[in-house]
Image (cartoon, rainbow, N blue to C red; front, side, top):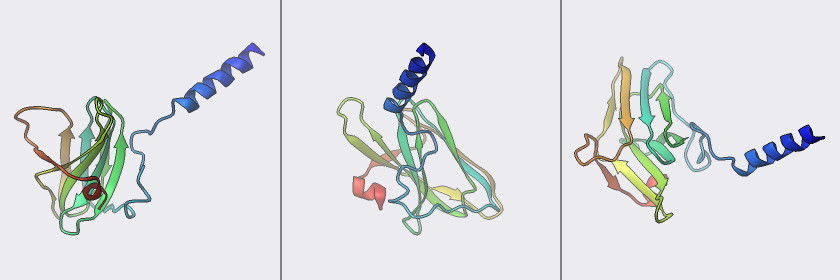
Length: 144
């Protein structure tokens, strides 16, 4: 009996503390179907810092998000088979101090060309002279 109660309490604890997992498509209903090109051996790897984050990859020419994922703090996620095109990343997170949602977008494009292999790695780390600048955007800009 003690064993059953212990397991039951453990399961209740897991359900109460359940969170999103890295790679989860939390906004599948807001973004169109994901776009892949299985013939492209390309990737975009996001190495996250100390807070949970949602990353959306937007095609610059169409303005549409082709992929998105939730990434837990201190974890990494790799988007694979990125099609030919120019892309920017958009980011959403909740500010630890104010509790407000924040939205940013990269200022530089990521280029994926025909017959390219490999990709990009973005490390989410606050720095004064980093090599990838971002601009604040609105919630509407994030989802459109």
